[in-house]
Image 1 (cartoon, one colour):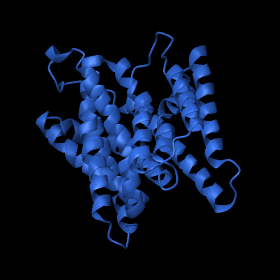
Image 2 (cartoon, rainbow, N blue to C red):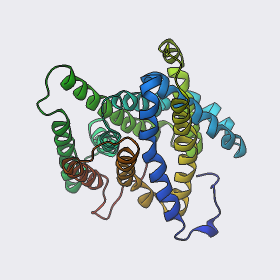
Image 3 (tube, one colour):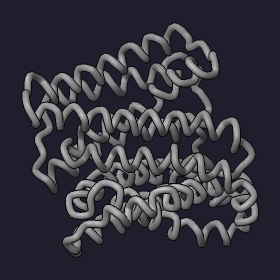
Length: 307
């Protein structure tokens, strides 16, 4: 990281406060997107979140004098924005039309699983035995989760649930592929450049389709506030706090935020949307997150560096 967002003197247990805040903020993104997508629709919601998030991060890009780096890397940032922000956000938005926020957050936590699988298929990186076991456990948890959600439903309801699960999984897979792409084409770019550039790229890619699919009925104030919070709070502030956790606690601890986000998402869904949190959902979540942790190297003493 070229320019740390904090001074090294603060490197005490205060990172834990930022860590919890990141998990709480990113966990709330599922609630905000759920409230927004009902009125805006899939692509407008994803585009607004990316656009507002880009506007929130742009001042930091200027402040740290990294705009030239972003401009020089505009082509890979456009691709990264498509893979890392546009497709995952659109897939998640579509899924949230049917899935609960808790289920969507659990599916989103599978990004490292797809990342390990993609690294094996495309880069030939053979996982360790423990990581392979993690992949098997994690994807088994996903299958159990899908079976619990879809079950024996027939007709339109069953198809809607299946499409929503596939959409969420597709978004997670795209996010995983973006990490491999960034590792190859943006390895020297500062995190802020990648974060802001990805949001700008996603906005550019989705802008025209989002305008064509803009809802005829004007969205209400609640929907605007929700999508604004998703952009400013979850994307803007969330990234800044995550960078601080990386700086203070290192990548190993920072990566574990993936495991905590679903807990907050399920809590918000329960409290604010009256969503059900069943024992089977919690059990599947534990299987998915446990498998993800093993696939990332937790438990073996070796943890993969973030892309």
